[in-house]
Image (cartoon, rainbow, N blue to C red; front, side):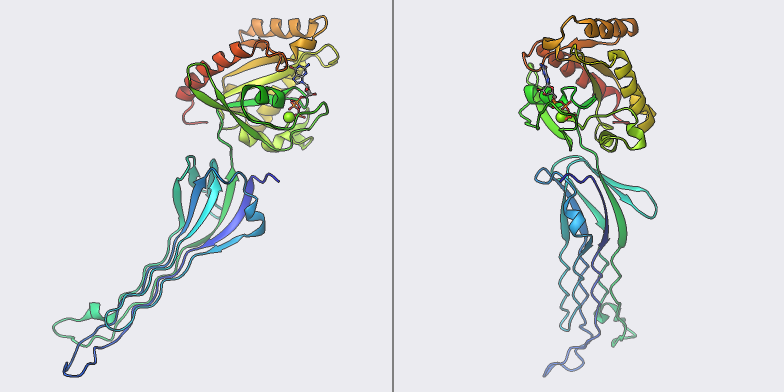
Length: 340
Ligand SMILES: Nc1nc2c(ncn2[C@@H]2O[C@H](COP(=O)(O)OP(=O)(O)OP(=O)(O)O)[C@@H](O)[C@H]2O)c(=O)[nH]1
Ligand SMILES: [Mg+2]
């Protein structure tokens, strides 16, 4: 199951108390204060890991608490520091504070760590409070409580190119023919139920990541179909590909299909319309008279939008598309560092 949102509670460990003790030893009269400090509480830490791909674990475990620091002891013994709780999350996880709605962190690279709740500091023992005028201090500090809060986790996959299209448009077939990703492919709509990522190696040995998300349908923004909830995963892509099936048996006008897709994106977030994109006419091997293709190409020419006729089955047009994408990804990444 692919889960991309979660709400969890985190609580860091409290600091251990400092203590009030005095050195009592044979032949050492008035040994003085020797109360040790409490240990610091453990932190709650998130770490981005390639080994985790969804937020599914948080369905089953919602509370995470780090260990508290141990109390100090006589003979200036420092209490042990509480163990941190380290929680692995998928790369692309955004962490928000539920109460303030502020973004605490965005984990974008493998191994990146972020402390989401800091452990409380341990208190000082009475040995710290000795002064020339007070050689037998009774004071000591208690440990500070650890931070605690409710967090909202949101997974936004990190990809360079996002595939947008109706169900059955050929998105999964395309990603499987240009990368080693192997999503399920079938001749019925809504085959893909969760996003898939594929790494494409371009000719000049650069690589970029393509995201295949479940198909969109008209009215997706009203909750129809599946695709709308997954649009967040193409929100951070630098470049979009609109896949339009132009096979002869498709009744839908290819231009209106394209406009419906754009409309759905606009309803989700109008800034997606500013994103650089190209149109891909899929399944050209089965186009029949080719009327659909002509209509789409004409429309794109009028607007000076790039249009690539391809067949993921015969591989026609794929190499042109890939070299174009390679260049566009580099360009788009430079211009949309802030939004994507
Ligand atoms: N002839 C031909 N058929 C294709 C081509 N690309 C995809 N198909 C077929 O179209 C059907 C749908 O392909 P998918 O790749 O599953 O489509 P999708 O866009 O991922 O569909 P959803 O996951 O439902 O959104 C499958 O039967 C594919 O074999 C192509 O280039 N040529
Ligand atoms: Mg699919």
